[in-house]
Every structure is written in structure tokens, then in C-alpha cells.
Amino acid sequence: MSTEVLLLAGTRPEALKAAPVALALAGHPLLRPMIVHSGQHVGLVEQALAPFDLRPDAFVPLRREIGSQAELVSGVLRRLDELIVRRRPAAVLVQGDTSTALAGALAAYWRGVPVAHLGAGLRSGDLASPFPEEGNRQMISRIAALHLAPTEAAARALLAEAVPGKRITITGNTIVDALHRITAARLPPRSQVLLDLEAQVSADGGRIVLVTVHRRESWGEPLDRVLAAVRSMVDRHPDIHVLLPLHPNPTVQAQVSGALQGHDRVWLCDPLDYPDLLRALRQAALVVTDSGGLQEEAPSFGVPALVVRDTPDRLEAVDAGYAWVVGTDDTRIVAEADWLLGSHLRLPTGHNPFGDGQAGHRVVAALDRLLGTGGVGAQTPELIALR
Image (cartoon, rainbow, N blue to C red):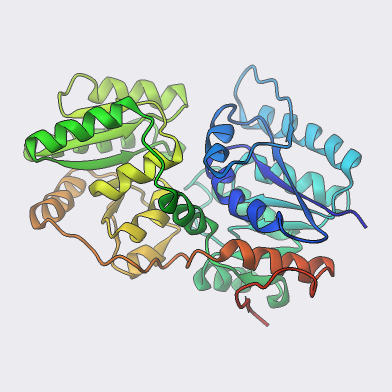
């Protein structure tokens, strides 16, 4: 029997969520993790893995000329198929809903290799939002052998789609594992922009608002409205400094820079490495985001979040009182931000509705059960399995 479990990562969020699984697998007496970089976002995967003292074990060369989804998926699919044929892994673990995840799941399924889907069961119910992520994750769910659901709500969504309960395990979200590990390490900051911002905030007694925007369905007019709201927010609150790490997509960069560049209290920067992002998040008075990751991370620090999406897929944070879904209407965004900033709201810390920091070990235990390698691994937290 093969002992390798391929952990696919083509984007930064995939790498961050795969890292705790790789670390948990490292001590397994039979299974061996192999981190595979699909080439989707060169540089960002390596940056995300570095604070965990991890690096890709394999890199899939990917040539992109036109930037379409078809070009990306077909290129990754072919290269991953070749890798699976060579390595013959025991399982392939894909994370979330990226093009890398879809291509990896298809390549493994067509070669008869079990697919484990990390972060399974997130749903908005709208194939157009988020696009193409909602379609990707629904398609992966049809062929996965193991569904690693981060929350009970995600598991219920899978059951509603007739996924057998015996294939579903509630693990918690591995991003909370990653957050705990990096926060405990207390790594020094690397971003000069963040250091300069911290110095300015310390000098003038100001507050930080962390903003991230990149969703494809928001490009154009919706994103213009969000950015107008951000600019208005800064103008209305003289103590506010906005920190906005730019997404690597050039379309998003151009739109954000055009709307916000030149404001003396808007700090645009390159993507922050993960320790710096958590450092900024921990200090923030408010998060404005369309990112799933920040919605999952902000509760750990008690930071309120405004979710600038029309069709949310992580209602656990909303139900727990950590997030508010405000869409892309600039008037509503400004009104909600005025209330949160005016009240200086800070939420309880110490409880995150997305996990307890032990998800990586539960994933390994679920893989043991899938592959028949159970009973030989290290002690793991209790598994929560649906029957």
C-alpha cells in the first residue's frame, strides 16, 4: 500500500489550511504527507508555508497565457494526473473550492485514488456567487470519498445533498490550528508598511481597519461601491487608518489603487505574510472583507467583521455575533461601520465558532479510518462523525 497523502495547494488559503494537516501527518508511523504546489499562485504558497517551516515537496509547472479558468484547470489537471500516475498516493487531499482543488479531485477520481475534501460543505446556494467557487465545491462533493466538514452547518448541508453520513466527519477548520500556532510563535513583523502604520497609530492614538476585497463576482460596480464606502469611512472617522493588502490579481489591484491611492490614511501594501496578517488582525478595530479566511480568523481575536458579500457561506460567525453581512451597498456599509466604530465594539475572545485548534489531528484520524491505517497513529482528539 502506498503511504503518501498528496496535499494540494495552489493558493495561499489552501497552503495555510493544509499546513496543520501536514504537521499532524508528520508524526504518523505509516502515512507521509507530500505537499504539492499546483503553480496557480507562484510565490504566495511558498510564503504561506514558510512560517510553519514547511515547503512544497513537488511543484507542478504551469504555463498561463490568457488567464482563463479553462486554461488553468486543464493545465493543472494534466500535470496532476502525471504526478498521481508516478506517485500512486494512498489519497489526495484537496482544500476548499479553488481551481486547483477541482482539478486535483478530478485527476485523483479518474485514477481511482480516494479524494479527501478539506473544508467540505460550505454553501451559498448560488452558483453565481461566489463564482466559480460555489460550482467547484459542489462538483468536488459529488466525487469525494471523505468529506472533512469544518462545522456542523457544513455537515448538514452535505447531508441535505444526500452525501452518506458515514463519509462525513466534522473536524473544525484547520485555519484555527494555523492561527494558534503562528500566534504562539510571536514572530517579528516583516512588512515595512505595517511597521510604519503601527508607529503612526501609536503616535496619533488612531485605530486600524483591515480591509480585503477580491471576489470575482464583485469586480466592476459592486467593488467600486465597496471602495467608495471605505473611503467615506476614513473621511468620517479621523482616527481611522485603513490597511488594505492588495490581491495579486492585476484587475483587482488596478481598481483598488484607482479608488483609494493618495488618501493619507489609506495604506495599500503587497500581500502580507501570514504572521503579519494575524498581527494586523489582532490590532484591528474592524475588518471589512469578502474573504472567507478573515471571517474564520477574526473571532479568535474578538474583532467584528463586516462581510461585503451578497450571498454568505459562513453564517457561523454571523450567528455567533462576530460578523454582519452587509452586501456591496455603500450606504449600508458606511452605516454599519459608523455604528461599530462609534461604539468601539470589541467582542469576546477565546471562542471561535469555526474550530478549537485541533482540526489537523481529527483530519488524520479520519484519513486513518478511510485508509484502514487507524489504531497505529498518535493520540487524537475525539472525532465527531455523522452516521
